[in-house]
Image 1 (cartoon, one colour):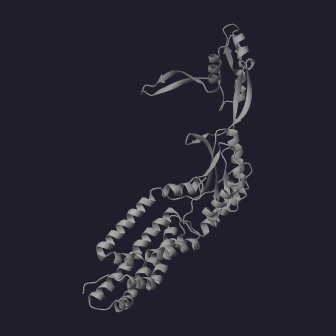
Image 2 (cartoon, helix red, strand yellow; image 1 turned 180 degrees about the vertical axis):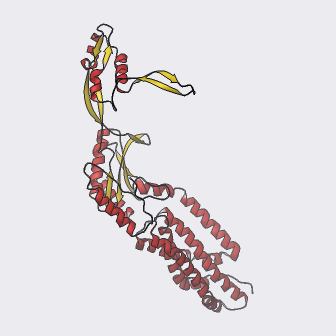
Image 3 (cartoon, helix red, strand yellow; image 1 turned 60 degrees about the vertical axis):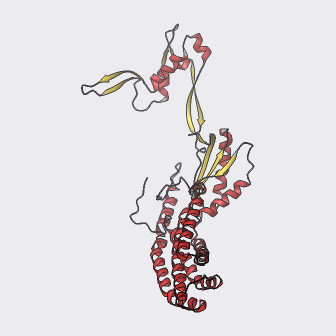
Length: 397
C-alpha cells in the first residue's frame, strides 16, 4: 500500500508516519511496514546485520538472537527477519520398494503427479493469425489445485493396471526457508530494523553492535554490519583519492596566484576553522558524517578560500603601495570585512531553506556550510592577520 503526501514537511511528515505505524501495528497476524520514499539509491533498512555461516538451523537461531537484541535497543522499530517466517512445503514420500513390486517406475509417478497438479503440455494449437498456444492436459479443477487432487491421481503399472498414488506415496508437510541468500559464496541471512523518528541512525547502530559484540558465536560464523554503515563505506571507497586530488588542485591554483608558498599557507589556514564549525553544526543538528556532509565540507573549503583570497590579495596590494605590514593588515581587515561578511550572509541565507526543509539529501550539506561559514568568518578576523604577520611574504614595491 502506498500513501501519497502532497507536501513534505520536515516536522509534520515524520509525526504523521509514526501515527500510521501505530494504527497498522494493531492488525493481528499481519506485518505492515510504513516507509518514507528516499531519493537516490535507497537502502532496505538503515540498520542491518548480516549473519554468515553454513548451517541453516544455526543461522536461524543466530538471526532470532540478533532480532531480540535489536528489539531491546532503544530507537529501533519495524524488524525484518527472513528466517522467522518459514515456508511450508508439501512433500510426497514414495515407497520405492512397494512401487517396484507393483511395477511403477519413478519416472511415471513423477509425470503423473505433474499431470494432476500442474498439467503437462501435450501439443500446440495454432490460430489462423499464426499465434501458438500450448495444449495442457490435467485433472479438472475449479481454481487452484488442492490436496484432494492427490487422491484422484492414478499411475499406470506394467503389471497391475492403474494404481492409486495413495498406495505408494504419503503426504508430509515440512518447513523450509523462504529464500537462501549468499554473500561471498557463503550462506547468509540479514536481519534489519528501521530507526524511530528523533533517533540518530549512527548512535542506534553502535548500540546494536555493542550488544552483538558480546554474543558468543559458534566457530565458523560471523556477523558484519550492513545497511547504512556498509553503504557509507562503499560511498567513501574512492573518496580519499578524489579529496587528495581536490586539495592538490586547490594548492596549485593558490601557488599560481600568490607565487609563494607562504601566501598559499596563509590563505589555506582558514580551512580548519570552517571544518570545526561544520562538525559542530552536524552535532547540533543530530546528523552523521555522511557522504552528503563530506560534499558540504568540500564546497565549504571553496567558499572559505575565496574569502581568504580577497583579504590576503588586498593586503598584498596595500603593501605594494608602500604601506607597512601592520598598516596593510589593519586596513585590509577594515575594508574587506564588510564584503566578506555580506558574501557569507548571502551564502548562509541560501542554505537556510534546505536546513528548514529537513530533507536527508540536502540538510547535512547545508548544515556543514552554514556552521563552517559562521566559525570561519569569526575566527578569520583573528587567525588570518596573525598568520600574515608571522609568514608575511616578500612583496616587490
